[in-house]
Structure formats: structure tokens, C-alpha cells
Length: 185
Image 1 (tube, rainbow, N blue to C red):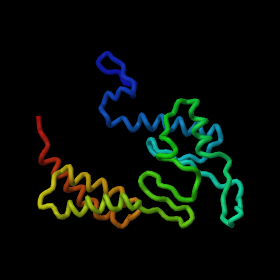
Image 2: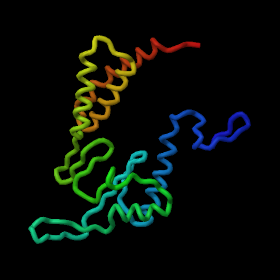
Image 3: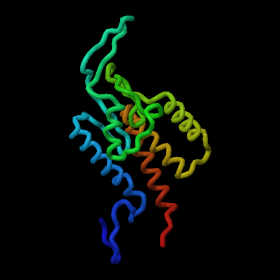
Image 4: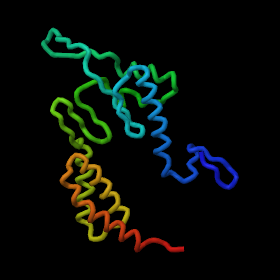
């Protein structure tokens, strides 16, 4: 809560603009994780409003056709049923969720627990490659386009860390460009 000019503002009114918004979502997500942990739904990983529930199989099943399946202590449907009591709005399972598996897409990356690898989904790979190619072909680029490329490259360097050494030059160019176009009052 913030007091300013004789009035009180609660974080959900964002008295300092949208910069504080992720913090508000984070508080709600943190509380959700705490509640889920009290219900023994663990471990839960979250990033702002993205949740990833992980658990080891409780049993292995060999099907008649020889394929292997697993059972778990709880399913994603169980998690949704529990959190319905709290009024948490989840995306439909068909749209963004799936039951437990050894690979998943989370925070924009494909995670494969069996191969211990993290990669960029092919749709993002194509999107980012197209964005980069068009940026490099352009004779002139805007500050906004440069900042977008910088954000894209920051995202990719999470899994391709050798590329992070090139980001400081781009950061300095953005800073210099932003200073030169700043309006001084």
C-alpha cells in the first residue's frame, strides 16, 4: 500500500504505472504455490502466471501392446479441481495444459527431462530467425525494432549462453540512441 497526496493506493491500482504489474501477479502466484504445497501438490515452478507441476511417476504400467505408461499421485485435472475452490481461472487443459510427461514447453522453451536438454520450439525458432533476418537486411532500424531484437536475443541466450557476449554492444547502442532521442523538459 502506498500513501500519496492524502490518498491510499493498493498495489492492484498500479499507482506507478504498469511497471509494478508483474509484482502483483507474482504475489498471487506465490500464494497459489504456497496453498498447493500445503495440499502436497509439489514441486510447482512458476514464472509470473505460468505454472509447471512436476512429479515422479508413482507406478509403471506395461500395457498389453508392450508400451509403458505411468501413474501419478495426482493429475492436472486434480490440481484444477483443488484450485477451483480458490476461483483461480486456468486455461482449458486442451489449450495450454497436459498431464505429466517427460517433456514440456515452459516459459518459451522445450524442456526434455530424459535427454536433459532445453531447446527453442520450432515455431519460435522460425519467428526469431525471420525477425533477425529482416532486422539485418534493413538499411535503417528504429529504436523499438532494436529493443525487440535485444529482447529476443536475451531470451535465446538462456539456452545459447555463448551468444550473451554480443548483447552488451547492442545494449550500449540502445542506451546511446535512447539518450539522443530523450525529451528534456
